[in-house]
Every structure is written in C-alpha cells, then in structure tokens.
Image (cartoon, rainbow, N blue to C red; front, side, top):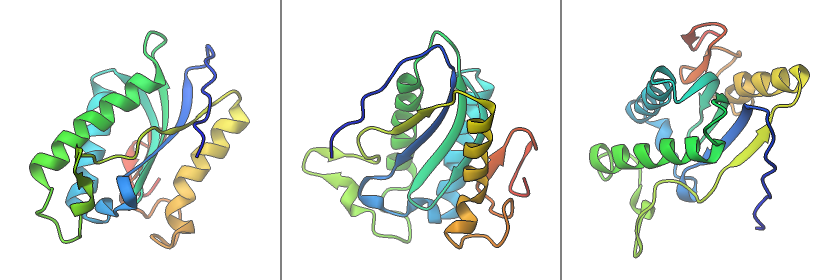
Length: 164
C-alpha cells in the first residue's frame, strides 16, 4: 500500500489512527486497554499535547489531539507507540489470554504497524465529525449499545472515560 503524503500546515489539531501489528486484538483485554489509556493521559498531563478525545478499539486507536506548535504529530505518535511497545513487551507479552506471538518476529518485537493515518483538522465542522466518529466507533463495532457506554472512550469536553 503506498504511503500517504503528509501535508504540513500551521493547524495543530489532528485526528490520528494507529493499529496493532497483524491486527492482534490486545486491547480487548481490559488491563492492556487501561494501561494504554493511562499512557495517553500521562502524555496529556505532561503537556506533550492536549488530548481532546480517544477511543481504544480492540486492535487500533483513534485520537483527537492538539499538538504544540514546536512538536510534529509524527513525533507525538512515535513517542506514544515507542513507550507503549516497551510497556506491552515487559508487562504483557506472552502473559495475556490471546495469541500475541506474531508480535515477535525474526527482526525483533514489533507491537504497532508501521506508520499511522492522520487528518489535520481544518474546521469546526470537521472537528465535530471526527469527535462523533470517535464516540460512535464502539457502537458501530457492536462493543457498546450507545455512544459513551464504552469504557475505553474519552472526551475531554466531558471529562470522564465512558459515558461521554
């Protein structure tokens, strides 16, 4: 699949998606999803970025994030992916109820697929389209009956996980 070309603008709001290698559904395990949520919120509190919303699906993550002007969205995603890969390998790999052996290949441990998808938010309308996508993604997948009931969904405007 050809790599999308990233267009750099002064806009600092981004909708980002990144996926576990081989679509292994590691985030269907509550403790793993909670740990990733903690990592996302840690970087927000550390002021690495401002987290507007996220949803942790069984094998991928969506973020609505506002970056600081001096930091690229690529650097933010790299930091999250690198840190969580280390956390997963040391705390969960081979110890969970699913087959995660495909994450260890001949070239080493790889938790995430290479790269990420990104949409730079250019308008208020686009912002709310992406926010609603995040909130409704678990409903669409059958993981919750109504938006906000999914435990691994967060919207800063509501200030709490789930029930957004």
